Image (cartoon, rainbow, N blue to C red; front, top):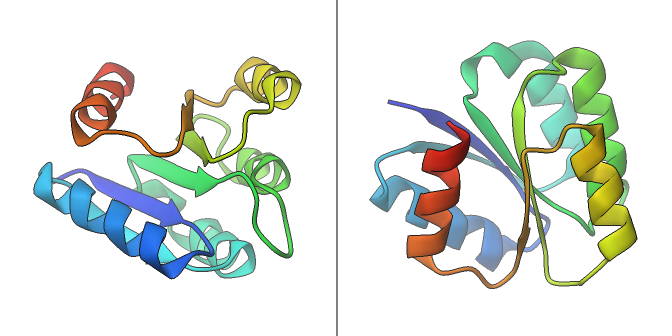
Length: 119
């Protein structure tokens, strides 16, 4: 079973995404803060097939967290989720190696398509 790491500071969104991923047949590991996620990723990054992270979080932005993750495992597939449209930042992240940028809210069908395309 593919394992996904989900990082979002909003409990409802994090838990909902975790449930959707489980419905789609994946195992979801949930993190509520960038610091917690960084600690987990630094020791267990090889376990995760894909990472989903929110763009706007306290402590650290999705861009900053992605940069830290890249130092640990630059080949990890990362999907950035955001409720905001930030075209310049999105372009920079995609150029830096982010697998996809997804605008919230996203349908289950669309999420499933993106995951299959990336994996």
